[in-house]
Image 1 (cartoon, helix red, strand yellow):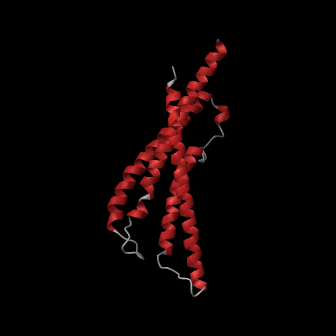
Image 2 (cartoon, rainbow, N blue to C red):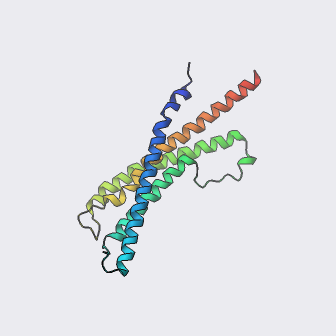
Image 3 (cartoon, helix red, strand yellow):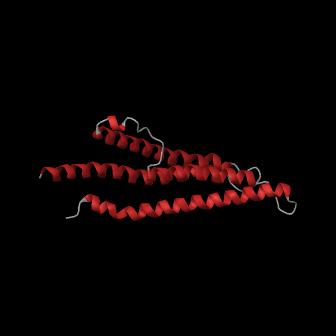
Length: 179
């Protein structure tokens, strides 16, 4: 009979797909950022290239999307800055417990980002508009926070699962050595 971990491992392609989608979105935003900034800078010095008034606000909005989404991507890769200097001096069980505790804290942050971010995006954001683009709602300026919260939630659930799975894998290894 397959273990619960083997059953849950079957959804790994969904995490992979989500990661690739978020990474693709970040790449598109970076391309848009570079293109708009290049056009704006060139427009200042070359007369036939336009220098649109909206370029600064759009570039800043793209950057805010990239910043929070790339932070969510770092969760999946385990690339966040973290304190590991003392890990070699602490018992392995305590380190695993602290990893799970950190996972739960980031999971709570993701839920807060989703709920509070959505409240701001639909509240404050929906009431205003960009200065240089009066027909575009400021919703899009606040939307990166709940969007990144969803990505963080997905990737943090995977990280939490992997930490819990590693505990049981270690127990299985110890049991196999004893028999």
